[in-house]
Length: 555
Image (cartoon, rainbow, N blue to C red; front, side, top):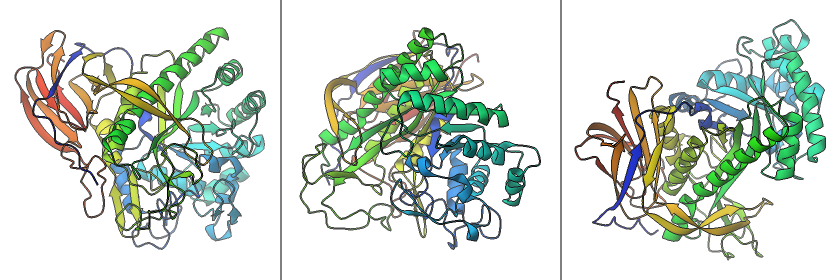
């Protein structure tokens, strides 16, 4: 387990020039959203929902059986939106299986992940859980049956007296809290989905679904299935541009530190945020151009509906199981392995219980900065949902005796609760490095990656003001594994001076792959201090995320 290299004695230097005032655009808090998938590696059962646990809600009602410690952690975080029930699980799911008395619900063979779905956590439980955590519910439908979709909207949102609304009342759901966001299919372009179909068929199906779902509730917002491919994008915008609110895109990173805990692998992980930004900016441009070609007047937006950093491991290793420390249970990992990122004889799989690391934290922060920089685009990213929230590479590792807030939980906390919503333009002159920028190409149950040499800034910056304009926030990611960076901070040509509040994540870690555990729950967690800036300079520690905040003079 190689530790992080000691920081160099002489820091690198950079300059950050901030505009004196924010621009007119906004960073939508919905970009800090989440994702839950049923039947997926203890994401729901054994995670969010754990009947019989002394840590779960007791009594009757749809919230009974939900883990109270998970609810408390999610409410404290302040989640804006959660997407459910998938993901791949969505394509074969019939929502009515998950309603009515729990003991009468059918147990089904589940076709996305090859398990059996108990349906004991269904729509009533999800909606009650969202109310308890304060999250906006986002339901994803398979787009395989218009009638099924219509009845789901009726059950959730209709205010009249029908069989569906009576069922809702019997299930204990508050009719005053309708579901505002609906997904119309999931990855229908892929043969791994039930209901896989070409773009022409999908757009016709989706248009009919949207028309009749809105006949039940005209106020719902919908997310349609996007794909970063020219033909798909053009036809989607042509047919659905006036009907959709968001167009989705899915992007994943690839990490091989379970085999190679090296400085080079650290660089490869943190630099992948650059690839995500390239995808988002390119997709935004394609959507905007298609909207112009087809005279679409309705504003379009992107939902980064699925994203995460996947930790890969050789298939020759025993299947990972959840460990009592919040990570992977001990096992023999001496089996042979092909070169990381290749589709060799032994193959690779995603390790679903590998805990989130310091390197992951820097990657996630970089993705948030990339999303922030789309705020002024004709087609911005205004919603994003990471896969997953609980267990399965999530923000919370939930075990029988409690939970661990992962390193990435604290990244969300930094940006949700200690950053602003009014983006401030920033010009950054900083040292860079040429590294092989990795990205996944397709998904077939194995790791298929390519790398392209790229120049990556070692200091990535996003700035914002609070809603009332009285407080400025400056988030800085130092991607260097071993060198501090002294940044000169300038606003409108004047050096920043005076007191600042400082929140730093990762600076004191002794291992580039450090992760939180039950024994060390705050190995990667914010350290909060204050500092006095007299000469405009602030030293950003190696392998860290730092958020500075100060009062805006004259605001």
